[in-house]
Length: 402
Ligand SMILES: [Zn+2]
Image (cartoon, rainbow, N blue to C red; front, side, top):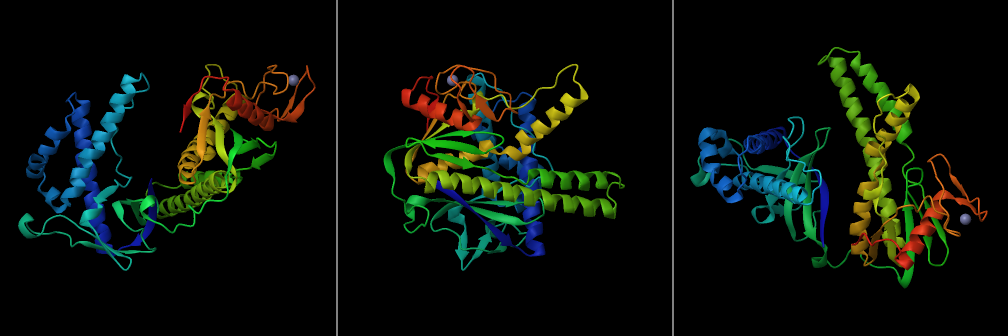
């Protein structure tokens, strides 16, 4: 399967300028195309690709951008448009392609065949040269801080909020033979482990042998949020663009990135544990798309409700990370040769797993107490058992199998 390895690169001041120039031009082209589409023009990849020549006449500086990068812009928009068409057809939220904002780096995609790597140095071409006319920027010579994977297919150049540049190498792991991750542990072929994914605990699971697992998830978001809020409120008292304002913005970015990194790291470890360490071959989770996690704004909301809504929605959008967790789990399970089943999870929290009676379970109730059969159990464990049993019986409509 295709994997990606992101490696930090070091570039000179001049090369950084070249990268910035090229990404700004690519973004300009992208946004211009989006604008035309918004004005009602029909999308046609082939025809649009042919319009590059005119675009270059209109903006001669496009010649200083490496041509393959410009071509990639068309493919990127084509992908976005195909996604849009698909969603419209499926009756989902259409999500028309958006303008790419100025403050974000527009990712540059290089096909591998035009790249040279030698001893952790990669050469990223710029536009112009030879028959193509004068070169404004020399080809970029970037130092890779790690060894890139063998036989990569394409390289995406990106920048993080703090101004560091990265190369992401896309490669196929079946072409590579010695990988510590793919050395599989013994698997129990008939083994099943079912997980309930949640807010308080990232995941609680139960196996076919009746063993429970608790995966706590990232604990530090409150600590970081407090810091971030403080920095932001301090910054907002300064004059915009003043030295102190800029300084505090940079501190904010640094702390935010640290938090994000810790969070991602935690999700990686958790998904690695489930996909790589546990012995059960089948992993079962509930289908998140059926969940209503975000609280909608009400007309006559009390201050208390408002606060609750803010805290919860911030958690779901920024700190929770369950969606990326499921993505990681999906590809790690594939890698380790496990089956990931995503099943309907409706009522798995509300239902008693012994007598199947349902009761309301607001989030603050951490323990499931059944009034009819007297079951007392952690709510997430009860839910995990329900998911497990539903998987066995395939009672609910089968959502999908990955
Ligand atoms: Zn019961």
